[in-house]
Length: 285
Image (cartoon, rainbow, N blue to C red; front, side, top):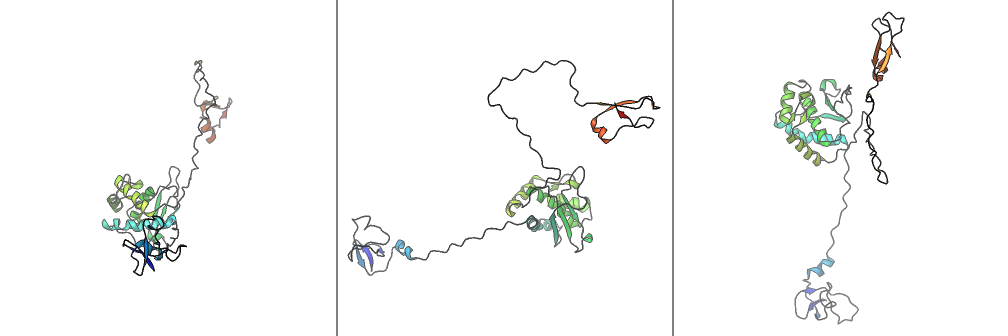
């Protein structure tokens, strides 16, 4: 049996209540138990109250989503290549179907003055006939990684035939690379597009490698617990302190040069002692 207000209206499910057979209260608890002024009576009519019906409606299963797997840096780079392929096709300079890309140093990549950020190898030098691209582990900025990747992809599309001239320079500029062709950078427009692409792919799973040693942040000077009056600077007297100490180097007095004398710094003495005009190795005085 269901219940309905004696005044009519929606039909409710009856709430089981310890009040006897004459206790008619709606399952949704509207009126009746909360408002004694509303009276209900029994009815055989079908329930029309959506709230009462919702109590019996099956609750939708909430499926827990599996945690998203973070991709490796190589997977990240391959997703970037797939996203960049249409750009190369638009300018009529399509990429090879297969490209190997890794993070690491290519052969001879380390120089005294700088680190090569990217390197592409032509297919004839690969056993499987596929271009190999290496990106420096010194880079951790995702947009800059994509910037360098495009440079190397231009080499791959050209199979390294043009070096940094000819077709390489032509198509690199069409893609939005600028500056010296041996060390290109993205135009502001391309840099913004690459930043959006990096955000779309997700975090670049790579920790920067400090090939020249981790930079040390200078420590801040400790402040005294109680403020002190600064000491007045001492008045200058005598000659100013020499910034770099010059070290006297002499030749033997019995040498044919007659006791040749020069002055140099400790930096160059670490390289080696100078030689007098006659050819004798000099000594520190």
